[in-house]
Amino acid sequence: MSQIKALTFDVFGTVVDWRSSVAREAEAVLGPKGHRLDWAGFADRWRARYVPSMARVRRGERPFVILDDLHRENLLELLAESGVTNLDPVEVDGLNRVWHRLDPSPDVVDGLARLKRGFILSSLSNGNVALMVNLAKRAGLPWDVILGAEVARAYKPAAEAYDRTASMLQLEPCECLMVAAHAQDLRAAAGRGFHTAYVHRADEFGPSQADRPWPSDAFDYRVSSFFELADRLGLDS
Image (cartoon, helix red, strand yellow):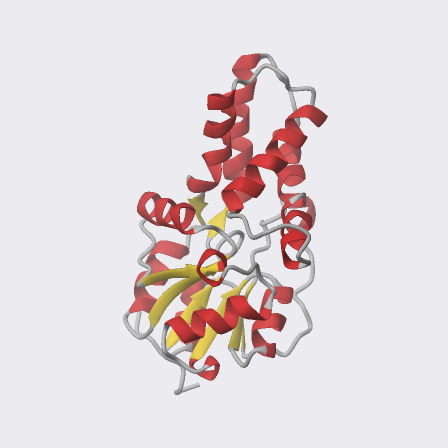
C-alpha cells in the first residue's frame, strides 16, 4: 500500500447523506404547497431513477449530459407521479439543486482533513463539476481536485471514469485508492487497477436497511468510517 499517492472518492452516500438532506428539503418546498408525502420515500424514489438515467448515456442511447440535467428530468417525472403540479420552473430548479446542498456524514470533514495530510484527495463522482464545487464549499470538503464523470465524459462504472481520473492526476491506477460505500463502484475501480477501500454506511438507505450485510468482496480495506481508514493508512490522529 506504500505506493498509494491519491485517494479518489465516491460522493453520494459515501461522503454526503443524500437521503436525509433530500427528504428535508422536499418537505420544506412541497409541504407549504399543500402536499403531504412520505418525504424519505420521495428521496428514495428520486434516487432510484439515478442509475437507469445514467445507463442510457453509458449505452449510447443519448449524448453525455451532466447529472444536474438528469436529476431535473427525473424530478419532473417524480413530481408528476406524486401528483405535484403546482411548482413553477424556478421552484423546480430550486428543488433540483438540493443535490448541491447535501450534508456530509459526521466523520467526513475531520476524516478528510486527516487523510489529506498524507494523500492527494480527489472526488471521483458522477456529479458534475459545479455540483461538486457547491457541495465542497457548503460542507467544507477539502478536495485537492474535483474529477469524475463530467471531466471523463463518462458515468461510473464505465472504465473511462476511472482511467481518466488517474490520467489527470498523472498517476498509475495502482497509485490510486478508490474509496466508496458501494461495492459495484469498487469492483469497477479494481478492474481498472485501483486499490479499493469499502466504507460501510449503514444508514444510507434508511433505518430499514441499517442491518444490511457488508459485501463479501476482498477489498484492500473494509472500514466503518474515514477515521478508521486514516488509522489503517497509518496517519496520526
